[in-house]
Image 1 (cartoon, rainbow, N blue to C red):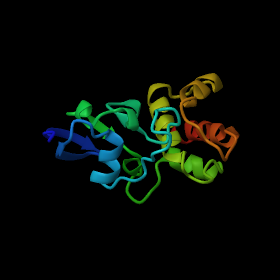
Image 2: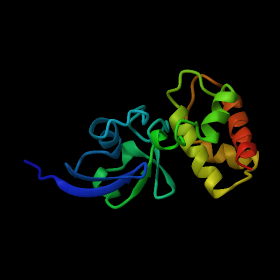
Image 3: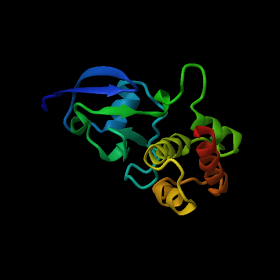
Image 4: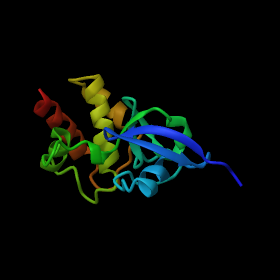
Length: 157
């Protein structure tokens, strides 16, 4: 029987002291242990971006990260992005731009956009496309998503 490992993480500014199996993914920990179902399981290979979270300021696909690897980390999921009862400006830009259709890719797109705008406050079109290339969408055709990122830039100025 595998022994569990104790990890301490901060998720959406809330501290957690957890015992996890060494093969438990961050995705499973977030969804099933902490009930944060905004992080989606898509391809389970790190190719679609549906499971994207921000770990210590960097975008990560949580399906490829073991929970024990993030011991001591600060993690942001889509549930931690809103500000009280208000949507975060990036979330609002996605809604206003019609960049939300089925919604499956939306959390990953929004968190990737946040990480981009935290790094580059006024990105070029090429920088936006490069940053989002790890996130797949099958509904919007990406035009509305690019519009949403550009609108978010304006909202955050």
